Image (tube, rainbow, N blue to C red; front, side, top):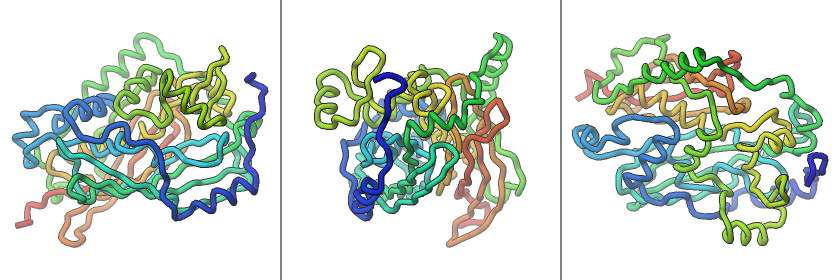
Length: 374
């Protein structure tokens, strides 16, 4: 397939076909992992740059109030492959664009996690700036442990758009790839040394002030290697190899895309192949949206400490992170409250690149211990 080839278009018939699935379970392959083992937790945590000792230091975790290793809350991404990438509309590009995540309890070492996904709704936009006619697919996913206890409920969403329309409109053609001098690169890397999870030092609700800034995190400059290491823990949606891949493309003839040598690749090729990313209207290969959600999750768990509980995260991924982009995850306290006996802190959070543009925005709610609680 050449760069001038025509991809599928969004038709009324395809939309009606998809509408018929609203309220129905979305079937798909099993999650990349099914059990929170030491290895799966470590691989995911390191893949998103989360060095919290509660995930990777067994002795630290044993001394904590939890008594065991926990998984990063964002590890939900590894336990399900169908919730984060939209289904249906074969040949129509999909971009994960955010969601709301609500955690009811942590994932503990040894937990086996099952999940179910339902298509909740569709929203049609006839004239988007990026790609003309687009479809927002909203899903609901539930995650439970081996005892049937609810771990989390999520409402992720993706936008579906025509690849040709996005390329022709060229909304993001003005973006240029970042370039760094050795001194600039070293200065960014030095910021990683300032990232220190709060850990066992309890943060009490009474000590939090509205307007307080959260210690920032840096991620980048983004490389294809960063994306590969993320996938080593998260698994991707359509990543298959050899006979497994050949069989999948045979069963889903519109699921594969020809690369420069004529072999089939999954739609995820946009995350490591600059030429194909340009064919879908993006100037270069770009990150996975769940990476930024995971980074913002780390921002909150680093701040909350071992005794805090990340209750919810609501994030909109507003634009791509191109390979080479550097992202700073930042936040500030917006409000404090007490509801149903829980001492809550609501924070405004965002991801900002080297251009000064916010590429993801949202809110997070954390439950903290109270000095006055019995």
